[in-house]
Image (cartoon, rainbow, N blue to C red; front, side, top):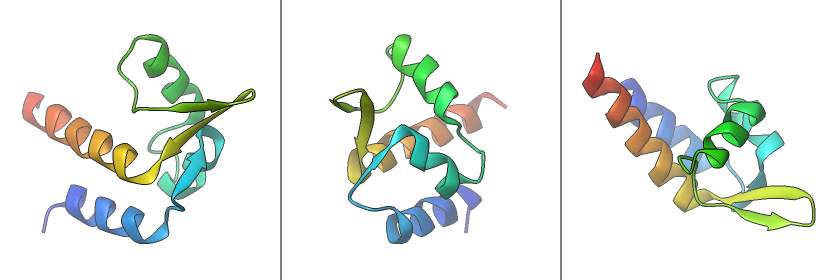
Length: 78
């Protein structure tokens, strides 16, 4: 089983239905950091997001779809 599949499966079980940009760091162990997501959002490359006041939030299913594609894209370049 590929490591990407294991990561996605574990995140499917552990992520809440909606989470903030800051919260994702604890679930991914530094694989993606809040500042990195902010940069990707500015470039239009981040996952679908919703702003709630000043906080940026992500919905679990769409975030995991985005992350899965990102693994595929990065893996195919190397």
